[in-house]
Image (cartoon, rainbow over all chains, first blue to last red):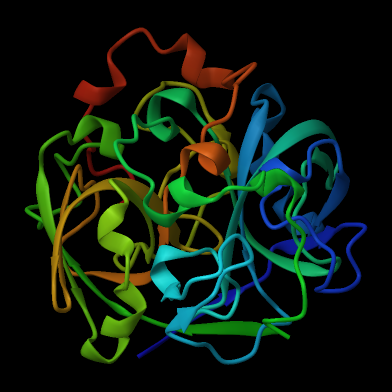
Length: 159
Length: 159
């Protein structure tokens, strides 16, 4: 049964192309983006400005189809799509944590954006230390990366 | 323009009712759940077992409509829906981090579940320290909570 959502706004970023992007928001430190929330949702922003970080849940709107196993940007081995953050997923849903700089009316200024310009936004949730910081025992293939993941940039493999 | 997804599986938990649930996965330590992934997605699980924690993105399937401002379970003041994790949101999307215990075929055993039994799963992503742990400067109204959020349980306010 299909599950249907509607965008609540749009994320504007400097990234016009799927190539050359940071592959995670931790690799896009200081890169600014703008969220243009649909005006009818402004009341839903009350008190959000008191959080320094927020989760954005969005659609990978330029991703079509999916592969169940992929070689992610950070590795040279194939992994299951659910063990990666690659965009061509069964449901093309993206998740990023960004730094919230300011809110004016329906405009949110954020930092550390790692998504394409024009990305449809589905949800905003506060990032809260008590709920979102977990003690990790193992991080799978990510532990084997030799380079600095924050310096890796996307190429055209998912285009 | 509607954005359409399909569930990739179902999350089974002990919670049959919206009342009396933990309000965050940090409040459901040790509570076990089972993810039954649709069998056609099994290949997408390759290497996921090497991660100790995973993000689950799912539908709040028993949530209807939304309010732009709510009094969350953890407070007695209204806040914008986007400054809370309350289920009655413009897009009824839930996000939880759970501990991954085991994977056998299409069955994932997880811990720290805080969602209703029968929840439709939309996506699984690895939780990775480098990408998901952020230094928080402020946590808004959450900082003012006097009780222990891990001991708070849901009531019927969003039913």
